[in-house]
Amino acid sequence: EAGVVQSPRYKIIEKKQPVAFWCNPISGHNTLYWYRQNLGQGPELLIRYENEEAVDDSQLPKDRFSAERLKGVDSTLKIQPAELGDSAVYLCASSALTTATDTQYFGPGTRLTVL
Amino acid sequence: AQTVTQSQPEMSVQEAETVTLSCTYDTSESNYYLFWYKQPPSRQMILVIRQEAYKQQNATENRFSVNFQKAAKSFSLKISDSQLGDTAMYFCAFDSWGKLQFGAGTQVVVTP
Image (cartoon, rainbow over all chains, first blue to last red):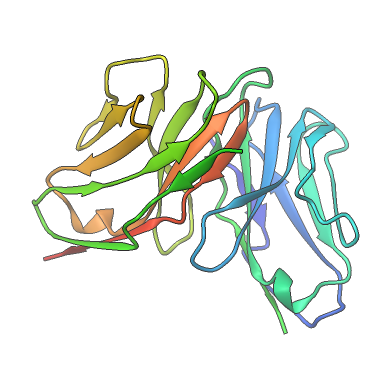
């Protein structure tokens, strides 16, 4: 069974430029998560989707971050414009259930460097 | 709000030896789940072990086992017969209704 797929693995951009990350969850997983992991810290949730609905986006900086999961499968996270402080690893995870806690499986992440 | 505390920034252990990582958490929830994830240099977050709070029996996965003390809100991980491939950052995580809260992590270094 294929795991969570993310692309790109690495991205280097200059500040004020836009950037987008893509995630494809494990087949059949209805819940999808985006996390940000700063250097030396644990991941922090940005947004959680149940199917195509964003059910928790309280930690998403909405002035510059946006996300979508139009068909309830793959998802895109966008930053526009990027700032120096956005340099981090962006992790995508998925889980099977939507109504109760279930184990989250993570992708390999995208390391973003903003210069 | 839930908080997860890992008080050991780094632990070193020799091959074949045992190491125990500590984790404490704070919550007012009665139903929740606890996890240990490992993150090697590749950055892939890999599930090590999972514990449901309603289960009194401690979870075990091969060389990995936990000591879950619900009243003390403690959830330690024991790695037995350590292998070089166990070198990684280990994160304790708390989950209540789908929101994972991670600790700061403990770097485990296994030496020959």
